[in-house]
Image 1 (spheres, rainbow, N blue to C red):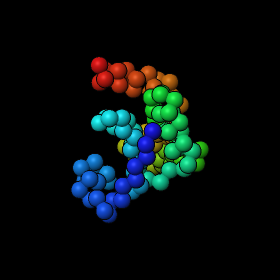
Image 2 (image 1 turned 180 degrees about the horizontal axis):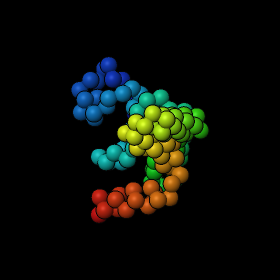
Image 3 (image 1 turned 90 degrees about the horizontal axis):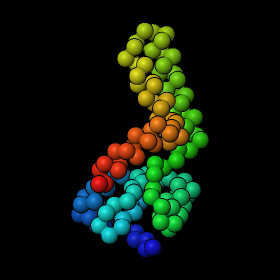
Image 4 (image 1 turned 120 degrees about the vertical axis):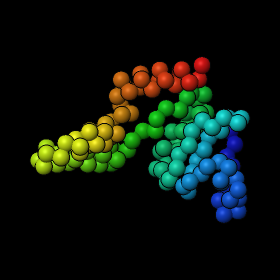
Length: 124
């Protein structure tokens, strides 16, 4: 496994070619195929998980959501649902439910089954 650091200021053409929009961006590549991409600063555990998964030869699934992020997404979603109910602004209801789901999608077996099905169709 090799690690290559590229300075965005020194290689702007390469950054545009790779469609890197945020710094830092960590990409894992196998040959010419991109396996994963993480944009923005991540906790060390996220980087460790990606590299350990790749070293074991396993496929990378969705990145785990930190407990803090999970709590914030569930809280914000719940507030939107409550606001939709209190002020009869029903267009907020689906947005609140989507934000709440965004906090738990990585633990949902139905979501894994659906995304696994579509990944298998795309890869075959």
